[in-house]
Length: 526
Picture 1 (cartoon, rainbow, N blue to C red):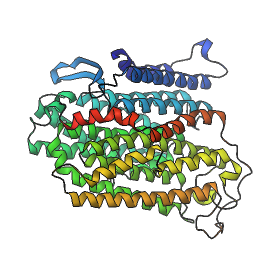
Picture 2: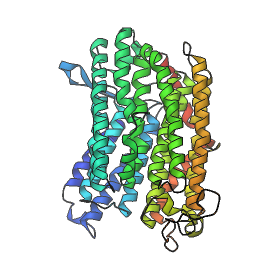
Picture 3: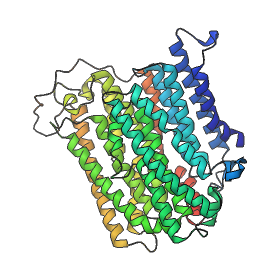
Picture 4: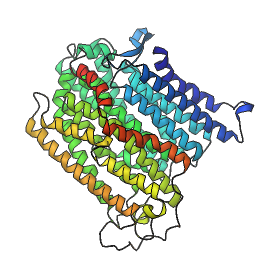
């Protein structure tokens, strides 16, 4: 198990180096470009197989215990150790990361985005995977920071070199926001390590803040929280996200939404709640307030983008929907209750599956139609997917109803548990305030249903969304029948559909993993 976890983190890095080297003569195939893309599929597939093996060997009877641990000294002078381990909180995120990266590599093998050398593209994807997996596996504050930062450069280049319109501006905005947030977060992590006497996250969680004064905890939570909130993304620190998603290539958007956003919320659960409980309790109402506003704000922006004549971009709309969905995750965390934190972790996984699928679908629509502008895709001369590509239209409708939280699908449970926890937050938190936040979250679910149904009507049914049957005058003449779902798309999307259904029908499979670990984290590692 130790070797498995270490290999999961290291193999993508080794694969990234190998991708930049010349392919052996026997592995070149018909073209060097296809050879390196095939290399990406092979390496990410191996990492996924290792992750599944780790999950199979995980002791499911004791998910609160750190397993597959490695703990060796790295920089003795600073007390920094290479400490790895997984529990019920991090294991699902590891498997999700490995799965989405493999599906992105498989999709890219058949549909490589336009841009420079595939060698650099594959290497960046693998470095991104390694950094993300390390973030969920390390148990040292300094290693967490290094892994957290490792993902920034690969994502910057994926957007700047393989992105679409305004890609350089979006890439710079992404890197500046996240780097500035990370600098502030580093100060908070250093403060905890110095005052707590160790950078070991397990030891600090077990200590449960007893060696940190109230003032120290407040400063640390504020500093760390800013860095994590930028990545989450929490309103109003979210403004880098829509541009990054709109400009990123399809696989970049899938990984950004499905994996990178989870690093911020994971940091709240792994670091802030158990290590600085007093500071977390003080700032919890503010976090909940920002989360609730983000839920409503994201939904209102999406509703505005979805209306006829707004020239809304479908990728941008889904990006803004992430602000609302991640608001539910932050609201659940802010309740400081096992129910809320479990709901947040469940919503994390559900969002990764559903939004990853939606970005895949939007990328496929844009490839076929040449645009993701909603006004161009709507109306009698637009996409009308139900008639032109019924399977693609059906999948888009499925992704929409899963995203709006239909019972029986994965999106329902996380949002329901977050609102349920807001009804009765942790002791010491204002119940009237959290009831207000719950009401705002409920309003957000209604608005989410409204804009997603408008999107389905306009794109899938060919309506203008206004109910008057009039096609916008600006809609260009559409092409003939689209190519429906291709075989490689079917292979890349089917796992996401199946897991969305399974998680919705069998939530105990995930909650059974997370709940004991969450109970222990909130109790201070005891």
